[in-house]
Image 1 (tube, rainbow, N blue to C red):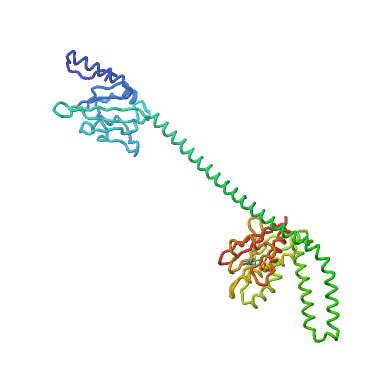
Image 2: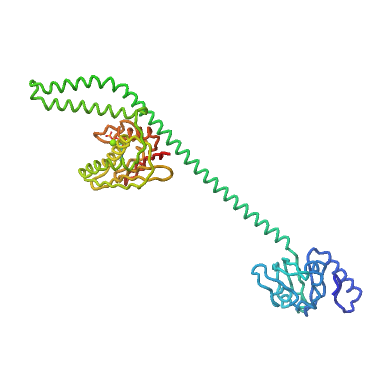
Length: 407
Ligand SMILES: Nc1ncnc2c1ncn2[C@@H]1O[C@H](COP(=O)(O)OP(=O)(O)OP(=O)(O)O)[C@@H](O)[C@H]1O
Ligand SMILES: [Mg+2]
């Protein structure tokens, strides 16, 4: 078949010939491939684009039924088209198809993506007389589409990665802000404690001297026959003097500049050295006491006596918050570069609105409390450059004290 030519061999009248020339001109000026077949499947018309798509030898085949020469696959499933699948042959059976996408192997060996539509042509009596098939090469469009999709996927991935990164940074920032606020409020408390400690240090010297004198005279008079019947009163007075002395000593513990003696120690050893005393108190008060010490934790640079006092204060608070039969646990472990001491009780917990208050000097909810136990703990923690955190629910309270290991 000759490219771009009229294909019928009837003897047309001049009008008919002119009509065919017009049709041929129209077809060849279209930007898409168009071919027309008669009812026997023979090609009657085709324009240049069809040759461009299928290749120069495309229509060496006699008619559309010479399918073996044409190779194509459905784009969506990848399945090869068989005889009845071709839009042209379906059109000759009366079926119209629009915009079907197939992949073809052209006669010059190229793989292309084609948009295919076909429609039957009817004569005056409604009989199928042939079919018209329209094809366009969308290989480039498909490639661009794929590339765009690829870019879009890449961009979406990038955006979600960046969003995730930003979310993480935001969270980190939030945590840092919270930590800074917490530290600032701790510093404010510690400043208060420090002030109390400094005042106590100033007063202690002045008060202790006259107190020693008074206590000495009281003890002297206690042994005087004249006051033999008042021994109990004298004992009480001496005890009260001792109590005043103890309170002054506690105040001195609040000073930031208090001299301490830090040494390389194992926290577990300190806990073990005071646990018999704690256990005895717990048995007496009908409470349970448990140890959960991680072996081989690193050493910390600490003042043994101060840490003993810290543990005893926290343990006493825990015990005082628990009803009989409940358990207090002391744990130690090493994680995230910190040696942690955790003191967990099954007590009544601390109300949310009081959490900020408990570290302030003289805050107490107990009838005989002085409200100095926790402030002293906070001062000890400060002198050790450690951290103290408290988590409390109605099921109990945990105090975490975190020390840096010695390098
Ligand atoms: N483990 C805990 N469970 C519940 N409440 C607690 C706990 N630890 C502390 N508190 C609350 O914090 C307050 C302050 O504690 P802090 O140890 O400073 O003083 P205190 O125990 O009242 O008196 P003291 O000076 O005799 O220790 C307590 O009165 C109590 O209300
Ligand atoms: Mg206490």
